[in-house]
Image (cartoon, rainbow, N blue to C red):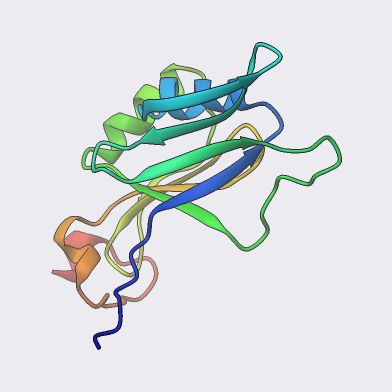
Length: 145
């Protein structure tokens, strides 16, 4: 009997305020809302879909629950990274590290969501499915070609 194949479904993000997180992920990052659940007239759960089909869920944290996740970073890919980051900045989103070429050949920008979850926005394109080739730090993409 063949072994079933495992597939990634979604990332659950615990938030102090699902409403605030919705504004960030839906309104700023552009995720499309699939569904929400409310309690006492406020959203306590929401599921969203990215342009490529990946999903995330926002879940209301308990009052005494820590929401930051040390050692976990969310990665979202966007083709025109620089323009996307400029749009976020214009909307008041703080970019912790502006788009830059990384030694492994991808272009990354870093920010945090309203609860401090680390996010990397990046563009790798077809390179995402190939083994990365590291180049010495400080060498640009053009010089490495």
